[in-house]
Image (cartoon, rainbow, N blue to C red):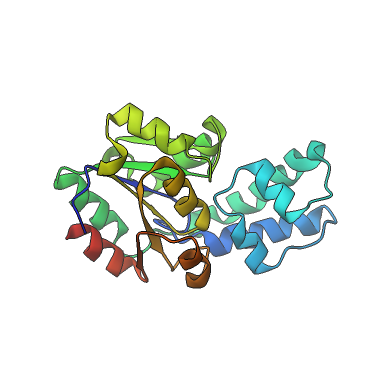
Length: 215
């Protein structure tokens, strides 16, 4: 792999093993409100999307005025189990190693700013990232706005940046921004779906991810 000045990571399902908890929290919120309960595949598909896009996919006939209601119930269930969510093996060491090698690091996530800040503090990773961008700070994935902001903020050209993520939304965002992409298959979207989005490269385990990035 060519050396990159900037590596941008998705958070959920890429650095932290949260996809199953997110999906079950969405399903629990649906039950609370008497809505159709999405399948595991459908719930995992929307991970990383903005709220309105996720709701439109899961509940296409639900009035937009009720999106916040679903979000509140989802947040209740997610927060109740958030303390049990852990970083994937090797993430803390891998992030520290890349930062120590002089690579700029950033996060582009579908989480809210409040949610990402809480996660960065809980994991102790905040000091290692130069910048981050969240879904509630502009156009969410797969729109390229997050990456455009990070590239401009850190003064890095698209050719010198790599997007690492576990969903097709991450890969599509990278394509739209003219940034190289690396898909991880151990998160929210399965390998077949990710390959259909044509990532630049693919890894199948957290260990393989850090081995690839260290080359």
